[in-house]
Image (cartoon, rainbow, N blue to C red; front, side, top):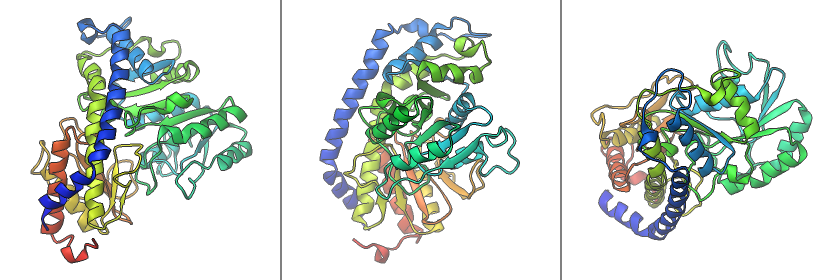
Length: 422
């Protein structure tokens, strides 16, 4: 298998797509730049703080910038939020009270969120279920959209519904990711019929992939991780929550304590990586999207099942590829790991990762631990044996990693040329 020739052909097929992605990057970069300039960012905003963090100008300005970028009333942006799951959990425990009902309108949520809800937790300690919050979900339509009528019917069936959750990314489900425009009709319909219900969007992996965000279309809350898209591969940790004043006010009471909210919280390291990470995020995200588009075309040329298609409108940075076996999943991840700048000599193996029902194999040779905006790949060991590739700080590195993954698939024997159906 001549991998160089294969990738060269795939690149030619993707040139028009790359031009469109450059256009989106320019729009988002200008939006971020406008927010920085409107808040008069200066070197003083990068200074560390200690103790309670009262009147922390760096923290408060960063939150105002996020609110501007996402066109929201308020924002919470904190290094103390350890992951996307933590940020989502913080929102749910802020917005929901005992006796309330939660609906997922995009099917079963991501594996780690099932633990938070109490669907897969072994002892339910600290879960929504323990707090007497009930849960139901609505499968997406056959076309991969939100089944609005079914969602409204489910809210009517549960008049104690307080939150409807939308998951933008596919997670480990074999379904299309959502673009912000896909959510518009659902958000409007929910707010029109049930104005007291919060619509919360898990925005992980989706920021800056399109020209708009779900908050542009009326989502009450959008949530994400800073070691994914919004941190631009520079932020070392953290998460963000943006939304309406009503929603954020409830959530901030769980961030710290009632009466304290967002007014406390210091950071003894510099805020510079968070500012700089957000500024470069539109560019970094497009490097990851271009890598995903190339990967999609490569595996299409090999006749394999890969989604989304290389020329499809994308809602996130993830490329899902069906490899057909555990051995092929492991080989693909080993190839990505071998092409990484960090821990390139590590050999990924499936393991019982906390928060997941099945063993997970993961390649993540990243500068920031677990940063999926850097080139990485992972997947649960279960049919259809799909690996989920994401990230790449530069397109060039992403291309190198794809080539290495292909070489590992063939050299390991996990994939044979006679198996290819091109």
